[in-house]
Amino acid sequence: MDPKRQVTSSKFVNPFRASCQSSSSQENSCEFGSNKYFMLCGFGGILSCGLTHTALVPLDLVKCRIQVDPAKYKNIGTGFKLTLKENGTRGLGLGWAPTLIGYSMQGLCKFGFYEVFKNVYSDLIGEEKTFLWRTSLYLAASASAEFFADIALCPMEAVKVRIQTQPGWSTTLRTGVPRIMQEEGLSGFYKGLVPLWCRQIPYTMMKFACFERTVEALYKFVVPKPRSECNKSEQLLVTFIAGYIAGVFCAVVSHPADTIVSKLNQDKGSTAVQVAKKLGMKGLWMGLGPRILMIGTLTALQWFIYDSVKVYFRLPRPPPPEMPESLKRKLGKTD
Image 1 (cartoon, rainbow, N blue to C red):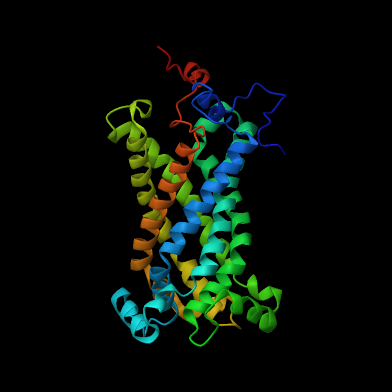
Image 2 (cartoon, rainbow, N blue to C red):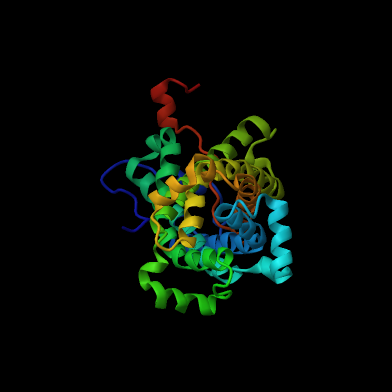
């Protein structure tokens, strides 16, 4: 299905496209919903996810080690101290290459497909239902995008977790990939796909829906002027704040599945259910503190970078949604 196509048999109007048409063509480098628009959104996703996850590899490494060996790595401080003692400064960068590649591919699909699915679903349900059901629309579009994003991420995630949590295993992507292929076959790269879906799909649904609604609330209740009157720096500040708030919720929602993924890639013969039973309720929440710090910062930076890419390339950026005039008339809210 062409995401740019509108439903021809109805009077439906895509509100995202309509809100962007108020800007002059000279302000935007392309049309909302065009192939160029989706390609640049995907590029923004590559930068936002690839760069941020790679920058936070040391914290992610410590978080993973707390999850798989809490008796040894009791907290963030102890985790960093032991890692530096055993592996030196270079040890904090273990897994950076699969992280960069894997999360760049994930970002391409996550942000690029989110824009596609949001556009397609809005076309299907029309302007009024898009406004009334906008939270459900954000949830559906982000879940659809993350389904494909995790398929792209999973092989590199499997290599990363093994490098970070199994001392003596391969320490580089170059040696890690052939080792998994030799020992476990192709299925070894996708062993953690279902737990990854369980972790990432709820995470991404919260990430996008919470962000979209938080931006809407900030402009409505906190920012003292409409978005159209804010300069680009002010708009990006709102983006960063909304991203951090969304990130905190993301970390809590997805943490138990994240712990299972880390432990599953360490224990070759285990299943997700077996790992969950072994860890127990308390064990599933080990490492939540560093993950909140990591994901809050990560999500805020990702949204900031992604929105900055849109600003730099002069992409259409729909304002917070407003009730359509047709719906106002139906509800008797017109002047």
